[in-house]
Structures are given as structure tokens and as C-alpha cells.
Figure: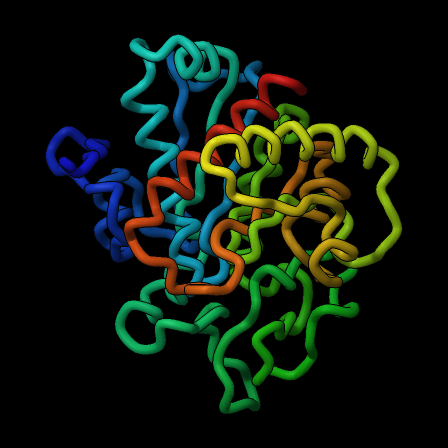
Length: 297
């Protein structure tokens, strides 16, 4: 079977059936180096009025399937616009913003040194241990349960909320579109779960009935693709307490009612090292779920 190829910059191509280094992804998306890189997809230039769907991917370095899934979705949008009626309609209605690799230094480290590295690569003062979990570095519930004050921990939250460039970059990107953001999707792996706020507490947000309705639609469409089972619900109860994460920040600080984390394949057989032959099926079912949800909210 021929590889699917995504062409983003008119000069070079990247196959979407395989994992790629940070340099390969960033070059082919024609995005410039920064603490977090963002790609904006729209049909007719920047719009000040369109609602925005915002995706952050690979904030945890070892979760390669998340960047691969985002790249695949970008491919679908760029190649489908003008030929696929559903995609054309979605692009005409909305702006789509992607941060394909939200933790560039950590991601690069998983390629050249430690495949299972999770955090960024900050050198912590007065500690021999490196790295902060940027997904515990947001202000809602910062330093609470589900994070650690120990720099050697994989969930070390850092010295203060937004102390990390990765977290502050996402903060600034989402704030730039304040009032326009309709959904935020934080891509993670693994566990096969669709998760809503809150992460820092088992209390349910006021909009939880609507969140639950949207998640149910997404999961039904996702599962109907290949039969992949997914669990859904609020983060703290469905998976674990996670204080200071992106999803709670987008919901609580930015007012995005449809703020979700997706824990992609699998359920533990391969874990973080999901084989490349599962990239396209994972991305396909995820995109089907997201399209169904977006069309219903």
C-alpha cells in the first residue's frame, strides 16, 4: 500500500505513516523555531471573527503518537479542502490552530537519548534532576494533588505556574484568541480516554452535562470506526487527579467550555511506543470523533 504523503511547504514532503524528528516536522510545516510552534490553517487568511479549534500535541515528550496524529489531521485538512465537502465546510466555518510538538526539547531528547522521557529539559536550580512536567505548570490547582514538588519526579510542577516556556507559550497562544476559541484539544497517550475538566478536583464543572454530551458523541463516532473502546468523563475521576494541566486552564482561565484531553491508543500493550502501523488508524478514528463532536456543538 502506498504511503500517504503530506506536502505542506511546496518543496518537501513528509509521510504520515511514520514518526518524525522535530526538525522534520517543523521544516515540513514551515513553522519557525520557538518554545512552542504553531500552525494556523484557514481558508482565506486570518479571520478576526471565525471560531477557533485549538490543538496542543506532544507536551509529554514520549507520547509520539500525539504529534503524528496532529500531523495526520493537518494533512487531511490541507489536502481535503476544496475536494472533501465536509472538510471544506469545517475550514470555511472555523480557524484551526495546531501546536504539533509543544515540548520540542523534550521530544528531541526522546529521539537521541531516552525514548521514555516525559518532561521538558529545564536544568533545575540546586538539583541534579532535569525537567519540569509542563502539563502540571498551569495555574488551576497548581502544586496540588497529582503533581510533585520533587524535581526528580515525572510530574514535577516547577517553581511557579507558567515558569516553563512551553506552558507560557500555550498560555499566550490561547489568550491571543480569547473569546473566539470554541474547542481545545490536548493530545496525550496512552489509555484510550476522552477527558474533560476538572483534573485538579473531583468536583464537576457547571457545564459538565454539555461536556458529557459532546464526549459521548465523539467517542461513539471514534469507536464506530474500528471498534476501539474508549472511556470518557471528567479527568480526576476517569483517569486520575492532575493538577495544573492544560485542560483546566483552557476551561477555567479562558472560558472554553469544550476543553478536552484525549488519551490516544493503546491500552497498554505497546504503551508510549505505539508501532508506526497504528498511526493512521489512530488518527483516522480520532478525527472521525472530533468531526462528529464539532458538528454537534
